[in-house]
Length: 209
Length: 221
Image 1 (spheres, each protein chain N blue to C red):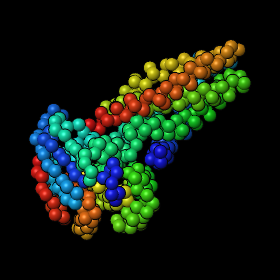
Image 2: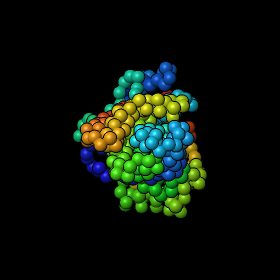
Image 3: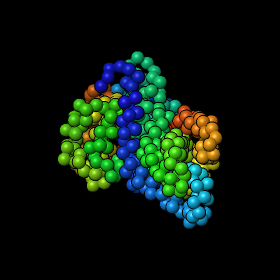
Image 4: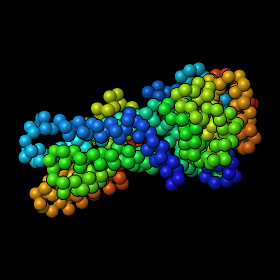
């Protein structure tokens, strides 16, 4: 990971955040701070606003009130810059086109977010994707699709991972492997915010909505 | 810049594959051209008179075909989230989409346009101008059309809405383009009409990506 520059997020600040969807307030007055090397597990019943919070942090959703701010090692970052270079959002929808080859889709997602050829090779290796790369993505199982979508996290190093139910389609072995990946990411100075129903396989502070 | 090219290449291959892409648009174009003699009568005199105008209307309509899926698919499958979090601003994303739309759809249609005009009895000397006008006008059609597609994001019956938003905006290039062709066939100066057509397309390239980007932001919220 780069040691400095506009995309290095060392601290995420959520201040007094309020989010509404369709005229209904999902949550308000939410504040927490997350430092490099730490993880937050977002919990709460269905419809409590976990996905909306992740999208608000990513800047895709305008909050009703409050703010999300990012600090670098040297001080506050420009939020837009930090978002376009410093975070990965992995949602339910993985953006994989059904008729395209898995390898092409992985390469696009990784390159678009700033990954290079070495990163791609590393991701294919780590996530054991090599036998899948020639297949159309419509032929993949839900767990395989999730692994393919996870590839960009490995291929293009960005400090803040926003993960929406990352464990859901994965089997026991891959849940464990994802835990290893997250642990390695945190050890390298990364940050993780994950919306979960099952406990995360890593140590994480719980924020419940 | 490299991110722009990465996206452009992907959009191009998606546009090419989108429901037959270019072939479908050209087939649609040929069908309209073939229906004209049945509708207005097959006298060569009459067909020659309407040939430039028909070539333009068919071009404008054919451009509409693939617009509905230009943003809608990416919106539904989550690709737009990824595009919004990339290194390039959304306006650049919109520009890459418009450019790919033009390369995959506008270019083949520009090749089909002179053929259709000749079929309807336009003089052979007019073919190069028909091609050039369709090529330049197609650029404007693609960018304005892409903006319409972004504006219709999330709307039910998006396809019809896109047509309603976009077709009125197609009036200037149809006037300028068909005007230039008409002037050519009358032996008049076709330069000004063509220059206005080019100006329209360049303005569309410069301005519509910003409108499309704002529409996409709104749709994601």
